[in-house]
Structure formats: structure tokens, C-alpha cells
Length: 372
Image (tube, rainbow, N blue to C red):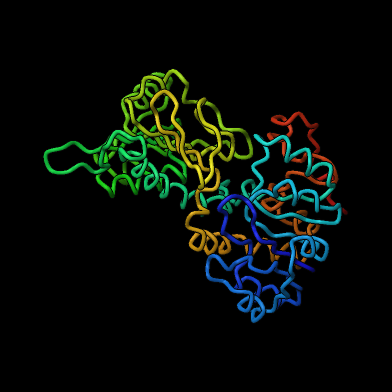
């Protein structure tokens, strides 16, 4: 199969769809890999590294799209990239379509087969291709939040861990999934006073077993969420409904009653955000203030630590890329229900129910579109 790796063009996005090691693996299976020049340069992977791994270097993204059958990316295709997609393409990348009708419409029009990293599943019902970036984003959320609490950033001027004789910052983590767990680990490590809210008692029990009295676990209700958010210096929004828009759990009224200079880091912004006041920002302009509360809502947080993120992502995507290349997309998805769960758009149809509901497209069962 001809596999294409274009350079990412989203704001401050330095990750790359495939590392030289991944390219070497696929070329060893007699596949052809075409990499846009400079695709990995920002994180230490030169064109020569890719050549030595067996790739051919092409000068433009247009050449990559024109040559390849399987396009492997990191972030959702931007408008100019979507214009290059054709029905014969299979796109494998993060998509986050539910809050992005424009992208969904364009992918439907393209006729391409579009498989989203974030909805591929595993035997345990987890999201293995989302997990490493959730780990990165969860850890980064505390770094970003601590920085935003500094007075120069508009924050309260609070040190996350405090000092002897001065109380540490109060951190509320809304959602105890992968993002939340990694945020908790960082916040506890820095000495913050941490409260986590979730509606899954097994999650809360596991966190209580792991941290004991170093954190407070609360079953999330309207009352407990309101109290935790409005009394915190830093709120981490880490709510996820796979493939669907994030629920707006944190209301404008809660934001209004938070302390002046407090901070919210909405990691759910890829899926629309879990606060009513959240809107996507970029690494160039990461924050804004609403009702005195600093909002950090960067939609590609892991892009800031692009080398770590790329290596972590390739560790989990490579087996799926190999399956798509070795078997062809239809057969690979027919034989693997977990990969098939990643199919969001194909043949001009929306094949993921939550995306269809969120964007107003009719839903089509993905199995009906896969060849016999």
C-alpha cells in the first residue's frame, strides 16, 4: 500500500503521523511510504532519517495526497487538506467531529474513508489511541494551570503547592478518567489540595485506594460540582463521552462565582469543552478571561511537547496502521471490531452514531459499507 505522511499545519502543531521507526517497520512489509519534506524536522526527525528508514520525500502535501492511498496524520485535516481528499483515500487521524460540523460536512463530501483515533476501542472498552494523548494532556493541564495562576498571567498569584505556613492551591478535577488520573498525579506530586469528582464509584474507589487521604473523592452531583468548582483555585475539565460532544457541566454561573484570578483548564475542548464559557484557543494565544477567571482551552495541548507525544502516539497507532496496510481498510475493519469502531465517515455517510446526532447527518451502520 502507498502510505502518505503530510506535515501538520494546525497552529503550533509539531507532531508527525509516523516516526522513522514506524516507517522502517512498514517498508519492511513492502509498503511504500511518502513523507512531506520537513514533516518531522521540528522534533528531531530529518528528511534523511526518513530516507534511511525507506521513505520517499515529497515536496508538498498535494504530492503526498495525490500519491498515497492511506493518509496517516495527527490532527484533524484543515480545510485545505480536506479539499485534497478523494474517495480512494483512507484517512487515519484524530478527527473529533461531533463539535465540528464544517469538518464533518467536508469529509462526507470527499467520499473518503475516515477513521478516528479517538473512537478506536479495545477489548476492555477503553480508547487505546486516545489514552497516550490523554495522559500527556492530563499532566500538561497541571503545568498550564500552575503557570496561569501566576499574577503575570492574570491569575491569583497562588503557588500550587504552597510553602510552609501557607496553604496550597485548591484543585478540582472534574472527571476521573485517563486525563483526570494524570492530572491528579501531577497535582498531588506538586503538593496541591486535590478534589476529584466522578459518577463512577469504581473510579472513585480506585483513586481513594491509590491516594488515600491525599485527595478528596466526591460523587458528582449538581451540588458537589457547584461547591468544588466555586471554591477552587484551579479547575481541570476532563469529561469525555466517546465520539460525542462534551456535556456542559460547568455553568456560567459557577464561573462567575469562582475566586477572582482562578483558572480553568478545559481539556475537553477537542469535543467542544465541558464549561459553558469555553472556546478553543491556540498555543499562540492560549488564554482569555471571563468573569475574572482565566480560561486555558488549547485544542492540541500535547502538540507543545511534540516529540514525547509523537513517540507515545506511534507506539499505539503502528499496529493499526500495519493492519490497514497489510489487509486493506475494508478487510482490516471487518476482522477487527475495535478498529471498525473508529470508522466515523465513509462513502459520503456518517458511520458513528454520536457524530451523526451532533452534526445532523443521518447515521449509517458501518458494517453495511464494508466490502464482502
